[in-house]
Image (cartoon, rainbow, N blue to C red; front, side, top):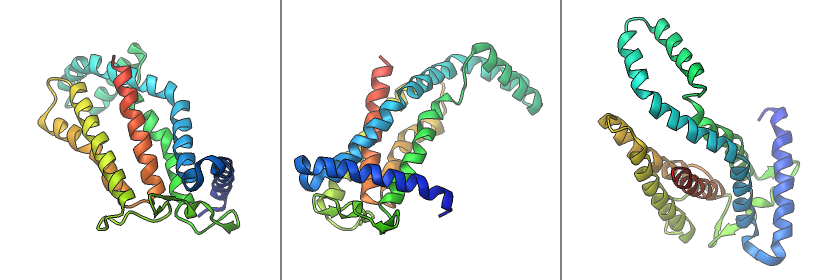
Amino acid sequence: MPSFLEAPVAGAYHLLTSLVATLEPFAGAYAAVIAIVMCTLAVRLSLVPLSVRAHRGLKARAELMPQLKQLTERHRDNPDRLQREVAKLQTESGTSLFAGFLPTLAQLPFFWLMYTLFSRTMVAGESNQLISGNLLGAPLGVHWPILTGTPAYVVIAVLLAVVAWFSARLQLRQLDPSATTLSRRLAQLVPFGTLLTAAFVPLAAGLYLLTTTTWTLAERTILQR
């Protein structure tokens, strides 16, 4: 890892271990689990303004879709002109068609930190204390053993699947009625990518995925009302 990335990793490590130490008298062996959930919720709470902007961006995209289709048909043989016209349309409407990606992009550094902190035996020049935490007997630093019946992995897998199912239903309702079959199929399948991701990351990162996707589902449901 490049040396300039060690500083944020060390800072996050000391912050998380301090939180775990504070929670241990009350939470015992689950202090690390609760700390991960609390940190994830804190990050998502700080991203609420971006989520609101993203929701507005999605609404703007839906409203501009008829005009975008007209521009595409009119300038399909002139990509440069099409790009200029789309940019002009965005400027005039005061919206960004890519605002919907902002919350996801903003979470990537935190997900990377979570993966790094629970994938290394040594952090900040000392033995990693975080990987000694566990959930239902499964170490937080161990990668997902798909073929085992460890309760922690089964529970998180089932909960991720439930959240993904509801997320897929919500995304289908958001699609434009004229959406293609491929778009609808992707809307149904993409949310289940969290299950695939969780299979290749430490259990702690899987816990993060469960917490953040649950927050996203609740947030989108509230914003659509």
